[in-house]
Length: 183
Image (cartoon, rainbow, N blue to C red; front, side):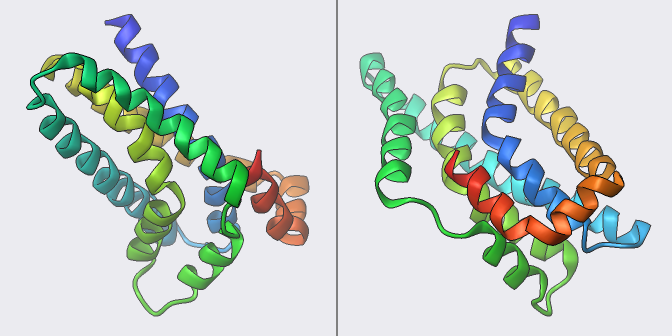
């Protein structure tokens, strides 16, 4: 069970470490407890949609009769990395600011940001990972993801409260998100 939890933590962190910066950018623009809860539930909704999509795709792939074909799923993250290297990635800061300024609720905006900025990475990593899991292991991983999402939420909020980080985010947020997305 420890190995399954560690694998879940690794999968979540590998797909969400750059999202921590985005969470910090969002928190730098929120003030009330109600807004923070909307951010949490928006993050939960967006991540839930991505995870559910990956589970559905993994379930469909379980219907593939030849197991060696499933091994080819490991190529997906390689292609995603090559695409990023060749084409680059869109400016995440623009997506965050544009989405947050829309007239929808903060929760829906955060869910949208989560899906737009993390979608391809998460699906590309989660589908091959979920294909290898038994139903009981999948439940453990989903619970691990929930814990990790909550820890990232707390970390993002806590880091924004550090005055020097808040000042850096305010002054350099555009450049920070661009450099994080290209690293």
